[in-house]
Length: 138
Image 1 (cartoon, rainbow, N blue to C red):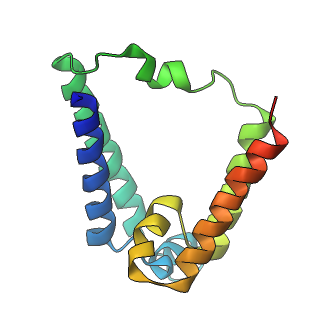
Image 2: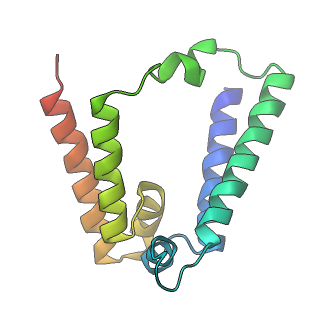
């Protein structure tokens, strides 16, 4: 139960951070990707602060022995090596991010704004999930 509360708090903190930093705005994300033009480094600062927050939270959880189930550890979930599926998936993600300015977190957050682009992106994202499952069923 403690882990559920932590996860909810992390998600809430993540969403609030996206709103405060303006990362739910695709134009801001596209400005970060425009390294040859009017580059906006604020997304890099948001990523760095997110990593620091995650590192501190994981340190506190481990120090307090709040991580009861070791099956939830990333080392037990994440595959050990880089394979073709990972590279292709990362490439598709990067191209989609660069073309649309949407990332899954801000896109889900933006659903509450009623912007048509968010709905189209999230629908395409879930179609991609479905297509992946269809192609990689065993």
